[in-house]
Length: 266
Image (tube, rainbow, N blue to C red; front, side, top):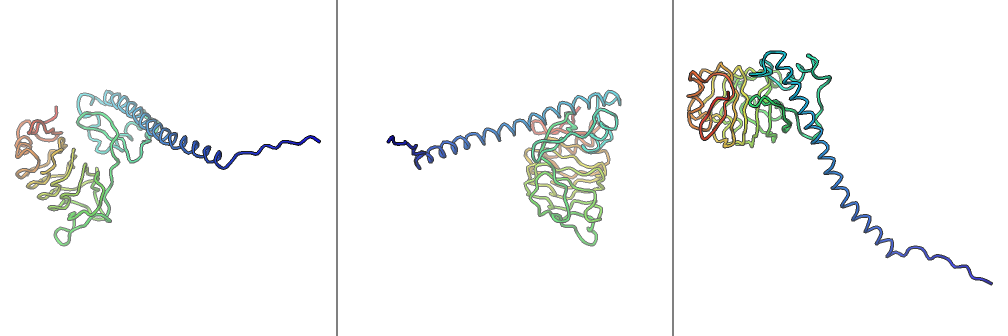
């Protein structure tokens, strides 16, 4: 009688070897896939930036503003994109693919780029004053470093940034909402941070001593024409910003910090 030969199957060692090989393959493949996904998102955002820059130039030509501020009189990035849509240059708002990023318009370079998403301050991270200073921000307890100061908090219109309120908070960028009614920034309000650019509201009339000093990377300030008082050392570079602002060449516009002094952007 002939014996039937049965296969013995895989041994435990063979199975463990196969599982180990699969684990190694996955360990290699997952980071590669994630990196490709990140690169794809960056490429998509770069493509949208190119589209935004192209249609913005066309918008500037049609409105006669291509040689100056293309979005003259339009204060926020959301409003600028809405203007492009309303004029038929965009079908819908572009969606940022990268996490924690947004499309930002540079008033200095007159171009779009992606930047870290900003955080609009709320009453949870802000302390308001009392009495005479009930419309003033007197303290910030949040951890966000790219912030937008809104026109009002919990129904209270903000018109003052009190002294030391944002001092040494690690801020990298600040801006004010288009509805801002802030008229005064007190002494040292934004001192000792890591700010690179500041866009001040048109409502602002006064900047006190050292308000933005101690920000070694601050190289761009956009400011309106209504400021009547700038105290000493309000920005890096001593009083060069103040002196230029109140000179015939100064006034409203964007100022750049170059070689230790402030110059007005052409």
